[in-house]
Length: 69
Image (cartoon, rainbow, N blue to C red; front, side):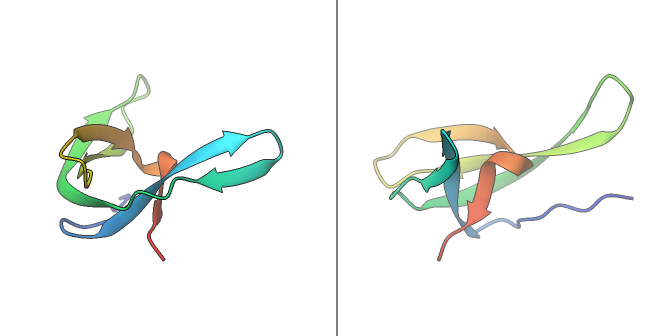
């Protein structure tokens, strides 16, 4: 059974691929919810609701987020 990589209140950054190098945005967000969704094969995939410092919130797949330093 897969398990979520992050928990509520964890600090995260969003990955951005820029060519070959990996760019991590300077804004550090806070995980506010963990969602379980099923893909077309029926496998559980984890998505996270993230609250950003400027007040926005967004939903991201687990592979897009990295732990904040």
